[in-house]
Image 1 (cartoon, rainbow, N blue to C red):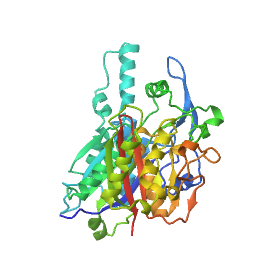
Image 2 (image 1 turned 30 degrees about the horizontal axis):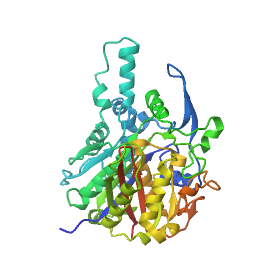
Image 3 (image 1 turned 30 degrees about the vertical axis):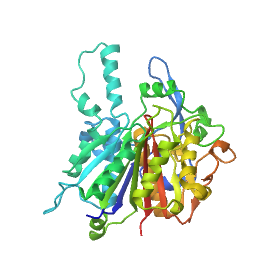
Image 4 (image 1 turned 90 degrees about the horizontal axis):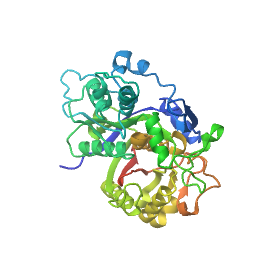
Length: 417
């Protein structure tokens, strides 16, 4: 059987800019950073760092209070994004008469899952001396809670599973969802990722690794500077993004709007170090995605880079891109949108894949914010996008996700015909 084409027919997100796709993308193209200075009053001492949150998100309003009360925040964010993507795709919440959804499924990505409920439980047990926890603690904290809720609410009878591969979690999830449709094992898949990182323990853990960007007060807005010579690290964020993937012919038959087409997926392991990235492993993932998608390197007009603004990670990613693109590398527009929406850990690949879809659909490219005049010579050799560009002809694009543990995931996409 010939591989099936895979259309992106639905997009949804919960972001610091809100959930409106047009407004979200317009703010990114304008280079508007959502990074702010966070100060918490948690014991034993305040936590202070640049952070990106979604303060306007109201889970009760988005999901209904009874449903929201059964979920931890990472699930609330994810289910809300999935609902919006489903609506964008023009699909009904429940199967219609004669409609078979036994092969419709959900593959989701999260790096830390319901860590907040675990933190609260440990505090209750060890700090406050309580001997009972909420009976919902297990089902709220488990990583697959979000995809379980999505499958139940959207009447999906096929596979329902979660992926955890650190910062590549949701890119891996999207890749698996793509492969299932491509192989003919599914007609429709909901996929994406969510993480809620605003907890004391998560903040302290990342702070201890010395990879958090520096910047207090008003300076926090410029704290994340991927590829800059003066970069100081990443900025944690929370949020969710969801994509509805669909068999191309099924989408065409029902008259669905197709945002873009996913054509390839590459997944590799560096097999060398837990936290130090390797250009060779990334190169193999890039080449695999291009090969599966039948995309020549000189057809790629845009790369949404993993670009976390860490000292070691950024030059390695640029080296991998230069190896793959060769003489075409200076013509490839590259930007790291984490400079504006932050690093969503397990949801990073999903929100960046969504940005890449919007770039192809709108023929526009968002910049790497705060980079003008600051490019690290070790990161030179590609077309760094310093200001947003509109009206640019984009044929194909890549979305990169590279994670601790050496997990590499690359998605290849084409503009919808």
